[in-house]
Every structure is written in C-alpha cells, then in structure tokens.
Image (cartoon, rainbow, N blue to C red):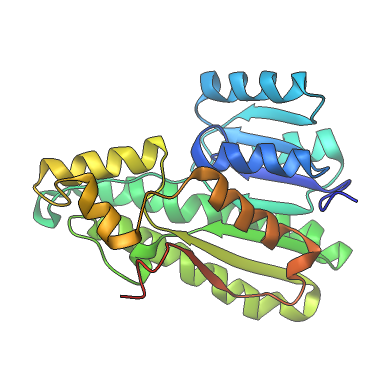
Length: 254
C-alpha cells in the first residue's frame, strides 16, 4: 500500500528543487498535494507534468510570507481536499554577503521568508490538526543551524528562528497527536544550492566543486531530501518528533 494513501499535503516552496521532488514523491505515494509557491511558471509546468501521470497535484500562487496570501494558500488546499494532514514548510530564500553589508531590509526579508512564513502556515493548519488529534509538520532547516557558514549570518539566524520554533511545537503539542520534525540539508543540486555556491565563490569561499566534495563527499540530490521528507510524513516515523535530520553526508559531523 502507498505510504501516503489518501493523505492531503500542503507544500510551500514546492515548485522547484527538493520541494518539487517531494511533491512528486508524495503524490506517487498516494497523497493529494497542493503546492504553494511564487514561481507560477515552474509550478505550472510541474503540475502539468505530474497530472499527465494521473497524480493529484495542484498549485496555488502565493507569497506565503504575506498573511493574506498564506491564508489564501491554506484555503485553497482546504477547499480542494477538505483538510490538510501534512504541512511541509519548505519555502525559503538565501542572501550571501558580508554581515556589515547587510541591510535592515534584507534582515526583514529573510526573517519573513524563512521564519514568519512557517509561523503563518503552521498557525493556519494547526487548529484543524488539533481538532482531529493528528497532524504532521515538516520544516526545511539547514546545516547552518549547527555549522555556521561564511557570509550567511542572516540566513543562519532566520533558519535558526524557524528551527527552534519547530522543536518547541513538537514539545508543546506532542500529547495532542502533532509531530513536528526538521530536515537539515547541506548543499543540494537545486537553484537555491547552486546560487549559494556561486555567491560564496564570488567572495572566494568554496572556490571549486572539490571544496564542496571535501565537505560532504558530493552534492546532495533533491530526491534524497524528498525521501527523508516522505519518511517524516509517513507513519514509518510515528515515534519521531522534535527531530533534526541532517541530510549532509557528515558535513556537520567533522
């Protein structure tokens, strides 16, 4: 039997990279998937391809860092499926630059996209999960919460805020049937990951692919992150709560 049969999933930032890989994998495992993303072109192409394979995947255009658009995304999922069993807070952005060159506007932008967006979406779905006595919350964090990265002070700070919120939610709602877990990837072969590496190299950090390979053996593939997300979404992880799973091939272990 499929691992997510008849489950309803809302994935933020699901149009590209590991989010898109997760949307595909979840749907292949029987889930009904709503993608919330700002990238309408990428999301439209992904949804069309998956629907052509008879997978139940849909898209709502939303900037979920904005309260009204986060609410619209939740409403779209609820109207389409009747409920949200699993929320995958995957959306996020990165800025790579020296700390003293960072602006207050950039601080707010990263906090909005990496922390506030997860707060908004979780606050929307949690009441119905509590009413049912069951729900799954998954958050995409980063190895940067454990091993800080050069020129990424704002990214590390914003992801750390989201990271600790997720762990606190696991503690607060454990006895009410809610599981909240974190995926912490290192460098992944996505637009986000490639942009990060490119920006770091522009400042003379990680000047070659060999440097990345030395830290984590090789680049991580989006599908490898998706497999971890599937595990956390499924009943196979029924006793996993408040966990931080580092998908990094020893990046944070050495």
